[in-house]
Image (cartoon, rainbow, N blue to C red; front, side, top):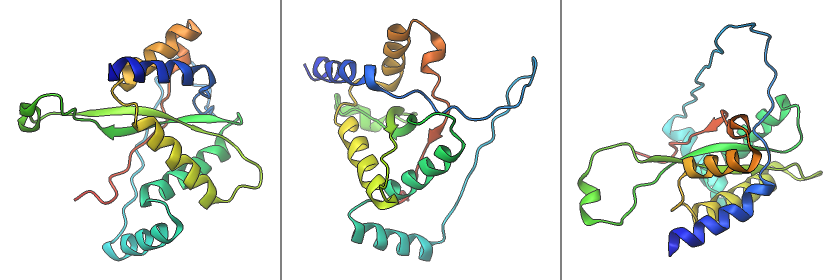
Length: 173
């Protein structure tokens, strides 16, 4: 089945999945961590220019922004390679009535961000986009299942805490 093939794919990928970014944190000594959502918006004109430039480079606007985001995270990451938690809309088409259901069909996929010496931002964007698309070809396995598999492999719940999330709504009306 499709699910079984996708599960085999993920079981092959997961042993080489980099850890989440190791970002600096202050010693909170019992305090709950605080998370802040960062939002950035483009004007229509700015988005058109970004889209045109990305198209000339053979990448999507989201691929370009994801690579820039990964570069910023890399600046603060204490490790070399890491993986981003990338959200996606994943409404399966397994039943004709699913299109009439209102609900949250958000899932996630882990996308490894690997350092390649001398690679340009454009080359990183192309590589990240290819990896994302390849992983999306195997999205019948939910992101939650992927994280559960990581937990089982590592024997620790901490091994699957991918809290740095990239979400793009570019080109979504």
